[in-house]
Image (cartoon, rainbow, N blue to C red; front, side, top):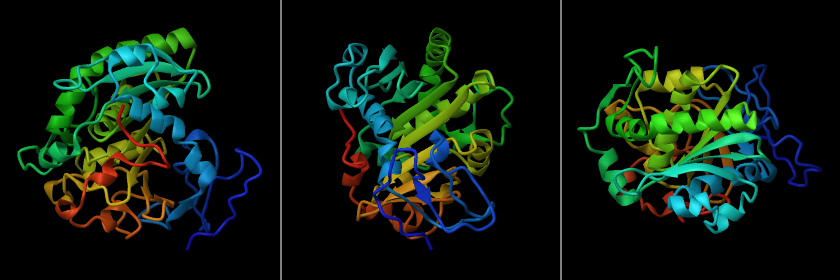
Length: 319
């Protein structure tokens, strides 16, 4: 049972997410950015943690970065993409590409205020995406060993997602390496919404294998579908432990497909936005609690996709 705590925090450095503590500790989705701790048992599904407003507010810059990925490279490179660009006014774009059709838009740059390199990937039309995600021909397949060196062949991902990721991965890696060097940075944060969130998760694993161990790689995804099999989810939890957050809005059907029955599983790190607007941290993989997506959205084929674009604490996706 989560504690109820007043919202009048004295500063942005106060604990963001609290829970009744059993004798186990874990860095939670809010402490991914070094701002608090929560507690739950190390195996199975622990207690649901309530994220309060200051915690929620820390995600706003990343929500804007993900929303901005729907904008053309011209708007990104001039950083004139409207509210999403205004939400991160000090951002320095370095590279952007894609055509928004055959290849999703993407961009790389640096955020001085967040002290991290940002990689962002565009999402797609959820009505078409839902059909693809429930198509049985898209089975989990081993990842490309040239992009994911040393990864076991049992770690498998959705073939369509892997193909999309592979089309931009080498170019993104080059730009990330150059930006890390130019800025003297040691952090990369990959963001995306919808299909962009799936690519972002693959990018997170890819970059963690390609960059020096001194570089921290984090992933913040919105409306993320299941990307890979159980071994993939376990690999993500091990390789990017405490560094992955996937935020799902209300009855959005995309996060619960492809189906578990098709062999797909989420890694840990879900935050589920309730109908009330409350944000709940759902520990473990595919938490079956009714307050988490897997337990809440039980028949995605009968659920509207309107929740997919948000709002995520008042911010909607799209350019």
